[in-house]
Amino acid sequence: MNIFLFLFLAFAMGFIAAIPIGATQIEIAKRSLNGHRRAAFMVVAGSVCSDVMYGFIALFGIAPFLKSKIVIAVFGIAATLILLVLAYLTFRDGKKSEMPETNQSVLKNNKLSFITGFSLAITNPMMIFWWLIGTRIIRDLGLVSDFDANTSLLFLIAGGAGIGSYLSTLTNILHWAKKFISNKISKKVNYSLGITLIVLACYFLFSSLRTLLN
Image (cartoon, rainbow, N blue to C red; front, top):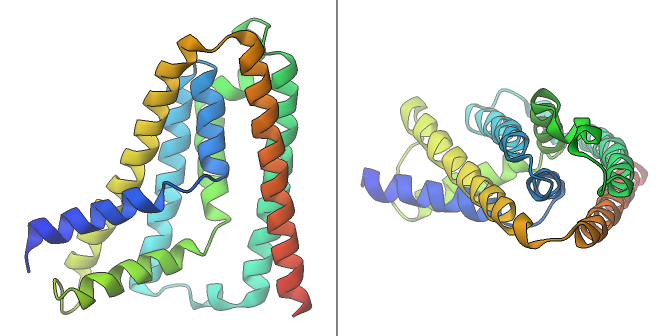
């Protein structure tokens, strides 16, 4: 096994998997653009922990119940509720964007930020399939013949590092960019992020209802 190429591909796949814009990236943006970089990193940490947890489930096969359509629908409904709460908080903070930072206690709270990142990621059990697809690609390339315990752990660590690297890079870029954003623009950004969260919530709700009805 070419260990270097194996780790590089696992890292790259994790990095690419984190690029599509979702609720986690929105929560990172909200905190970074409001100057709460540490809290944004806590969102990153929570999200990575959840994604890696799903990696353990995928590679070690300890939760076959997640294949149930009903369970998937329940996760979708949970995601809908979480996103609606976050949308409400986003709109509320948008009204206070010109107020002192002490009014943004929710955004600055590190523990709550970690829980937010973890909760958003855990409502996406489809991440399991990403890990399974990743292992299939590695196998098809002939880098690994069998994912034993050690190989699986290396894949999870490298993939998790890739996910965390992209989200951390996004955090730093947005934190740097905030110095060029006025309060008026910041307020508009908050409202835009809130609307995006509502759209995501509607998507999860529609997807869950469709799964239950079918």
